[in-house]
Each structure stands twice: as structure tokens, then as C-alpha cells.
Image 1 (tube, rainbow over the protein chains, first blue to last red):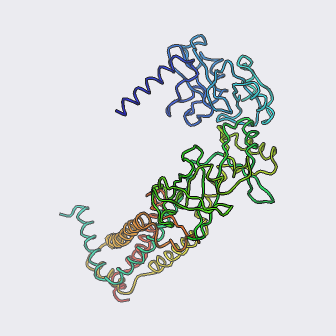
Image 2: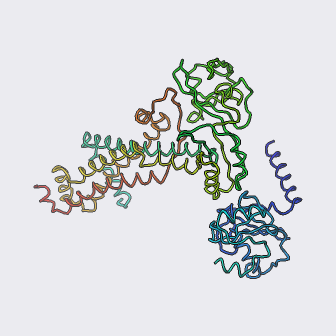
Image 3: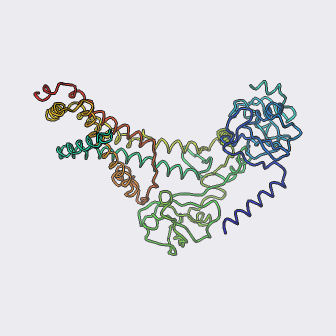
Length: 157
Length: 378
């Protein structure tokens, strides 16, 4: 009987997921690699960022920096996709480690917190959190999604 | 039939009978060898099992514990501190904790009193660890009388006992409701023992701890990583007792192997001479010595490891008990969960079997290269 209970629960979760916003993107498996740097994403669950496409395929990144590198040059990494095919982008809020919508999120540049790929754009769901983090961790700037340009990514290399 | 396998089996046969010919010498060798492997393997198993138990316990520990210090001593902390701490960015939750110690004069034992985070118990009922039950000779359903700080007896009903599998942590534990805890110790209003702080992002823990220390200079935040480090160094190889025992065991093994390696007896040299004169090649002699070495050391290794396993996991390391025991009245009677560290056993294997085998072959090789007549005459 337990099996049925779990199945029902699973079904319920799946249903809720499909009806809620795409924020609850499925977690990466141990085999998922970051398309930009090639590292295993599952090892860094705190930093994981995800892109879900309209055909419900998903890609994961080990940090917001690689996510933006991908986003600004989708042709290079997945030639068959483009920005319009993306249905949702999620990043993990630094304080709560819960996924938030990347397009609404704020990113702190130049802090003393490093991700698996070195310098990182540290994501936050709330403006106040981002400002507080900026003060605590010697950040340089709070950026919105559209403020992150290839030039900024270049400066972080 | 002279297949290579046959040759090996014949030489092994000869090796065994030659070992049996010097029964008492080889048997005492085997006993000493087994004893050394037994001591080292027991230590490896014991330390590994304790480390795992500690890690298991600490998995449940809060990310951070905040204690208030007064004149360098742990003191009660106001719950109001918790409200300000939970406002710090990165803190997910702050939960006040109530716990303390109680000395029972009649039974001469110290108990740990603890209030669970969730309200598990009604006022008047308690849960106790197996050590308390043994010490007080009570069971579930019985009453336990504790003396409050105002010298009034407080009668509590034992609702349940903790299973003996958790004895390492729960042995001296009495879990009671917050109301009973208050009756027992009469704490000032709004004060608790310490605060457990949950921080979602482990990277942020140090920052949060620094902020707490700045906000409340009279507190001491203790990180989980610091607790882990303390336990680790306690059980580390360097950890006092263990390293002494290990050093003695390793030293005695070195002396013993050295003794073995420094040469063969005249009789053995003569035997090698005879073997060579009746047509054995040097390689055959070496193979014979190799098999002799393997038989003794592998038997000693296997028997030693199996004995050590039984000693640690079935008899709870009874031989180490007196050296490692403290001075408490209630001792946990626990069985360690078997853990085998393949890496450490492999290291032990290469540290004992290989040097011993080499130590038996090298002197044999030296005397096997001497002409047979010289060897027999010497």
C-alpha cells in the first residue's frame, strides 16, 4: 500500500509543479553537466541555476555567471535553441538557497564570496537582501537581470 | 605432470611440512604476529566506529549554538536575543533550548535533563535513557522522583524508554516538558539555556556568527564545523591514548620483523644447502621461503582481523574499556555499529604481510646464492 501512497504523492507533486510557475524546476541529477564549463552541477547544489525550455527540456549551470554566459550566446552552446524558446530561468537565492525567478532577481557583483567557477554573480530574490550582502561581503554593485551584459561577464574572467 | 601450478602446490606442500617441523617456533611466531595485528586492527575498527557514531550524532546538531557567557562561564541567555538574531540575514530559524544537569544524591549519578524542541510530552511525564532506567531500577509506567531547586520532590511518570540502540547518546538522558523543567530549576522568566540557530547557506555561517558576536558581545556562537573539528581531533590518530598503543604495537612489530630478517639459523642455512645440492634451484628456494612467509603472515593477518572485529563489535572493545572509560556513574552499554574501512585495512595489510614476507625471503636469497657445499659445511 505504501507504494501507492508514494505514487499518489509523486503525482500530486508533479501536478503542483506543472501548475505552479516554473520556479520549481526539477533538480539536476548527478550526471548533469554545466554546458558552459563542463563541470558536474550536482556537486554544487547551493549554486545551481537552471534554464527550462518550452519543450520542457532543462539545462543546469554551476553558478549565475555561467548561466549568463550561456544566455548571451545560446547559439554557441545549443545551436537549435534561442532566447525565445526559454520558458523559465531560475537561480538560488544566496540566503535561503531557494530557487527564484532569475529575471526578477538581483545579482551582486564583485563580492568576496566565490562560487565553484571563481568570481560569481551572487543571486538574491529581494533588493534589501542584495544590499545587505553587498555591505557584508564588500560587493561592488547590485545588478538586475538585464544589467548583466557580456562586457560585465568579460570583466569577471 | 609438472605444470607451474603443480610446482607451486608441491612447494607449498613442502613449505607447510617444513613449518610444521619447527612447530613450537612457528607457532609462537604466529601468536605474536596475530596479537600485533589484533591490537592494530582493533584500534582501527574502534576509532572508525566511534568516529562514525560521533558524526551520526552531530548530523542532527544545529548549525550554530549561541551561548551567553558571564565571567567566562556559560550562563542563561534571554529569549529576546533570539528575536534579534533571527532578524540577521541568512538566519532561517532560532529556537531556544532548555537543558541542564541534575545530580541524584540517592543514586549518586548525574542525569542530563533536556526539553525537546517540539512539545512531545505532557507535563508530568518523561522519557528516559536506558542508563537512567538501570541506575534507578525503573521501567516505563513507573514514577521517578526528582528534587527541585526549592527542595520539593517532583514526581514524574516514565512514559517511555529510549531504545538501547541510541544508548551512546541517550544513556543518562531524561526528556521532560518545558513546564516541568521550569518547576525543577526555577529559571528567571524569559531565559533559556542556549539558542540553536539554523543558517541555510553554510557559506554564510561565519558572517552570521561574526554579526551575533558584534550584536551581543556577551555571547559565544559555536559553529557546527567547530564541534565536528573538536570531535574529529578527539578521535584522530594523534588522539593521545590511541597513538601510544599504536606506537607500541608498530614498534614491537618492527623489532619482531627485524629479528626475523637479520638472518637464518644455522640449521635453516644448512637446509637450504641440502635442497640446492639435491637439485633445487635458487628460485625454488625463494618460492619456498615466500610460501612460508605468506602462510604465517596471511594466517596471522586474517585471524588477527577477525578477532579484532569480534572484539570491537561483539564485545564492545572490552580490552580498551578500562583505558578509555571516564569516571561517570552511568556508563552507556552500547554496541558499536560495524564499519570497515577498506583503505585502512589495506594499509595494515601492506604494513604487515608484505614486510614480513620480504623479511623472510631476503636472508634466504642471501644464503641460497652461496654454493651448496659451503652452506652445508658452515
